[in-house]
Length: 137
Image (cartoon, rainbow, N blue to C red):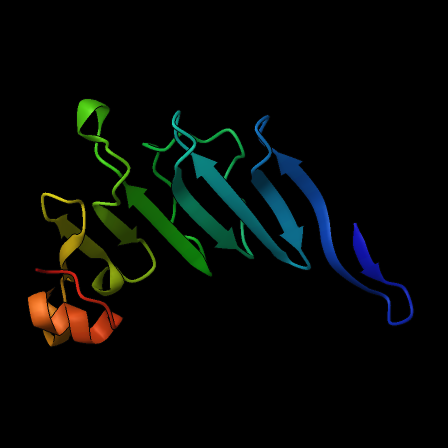
C-alpha cells in the first residue's frame, strides 16, 4: 500500500502480480486496473474501471462489459503467425480509436489504419512525417 498519511490519501492498494513479475491487478483509489498477458508474456488486455473489476484470471480471448476508463485489447496474431508485432489494438470504449498495423518484410510498420474517416490509413511518407522516422528505403 502506498499512502500519504499526512493527507490521508491512499494512492495504491491491493496489488497482485503474475509469477514472472508483471502487475496483474492493482487498485488506485477507486480505480481497479487489470492487465492480462498471453502465454508469451505479451500484454493482451488492459482494463481500468471504477465499476466491477475484470477478474485477475481472465483469459485474453474472454469478453466483458466495456470498462469505464480504459479497455484496450492487443492482437499479436495466433500460433506461428505471432512474431511479436502488434497487429491491432481494439479500443472497447471507443471503437473509432482502434487501430490495425501492417508491416514490411523487415518488420517495420508499413501502415496504420483506424475505422474513422479522418485518418483511415496512414502509409509511407505520411507515416514518416507523423512518427518522425524513416520507415521505407
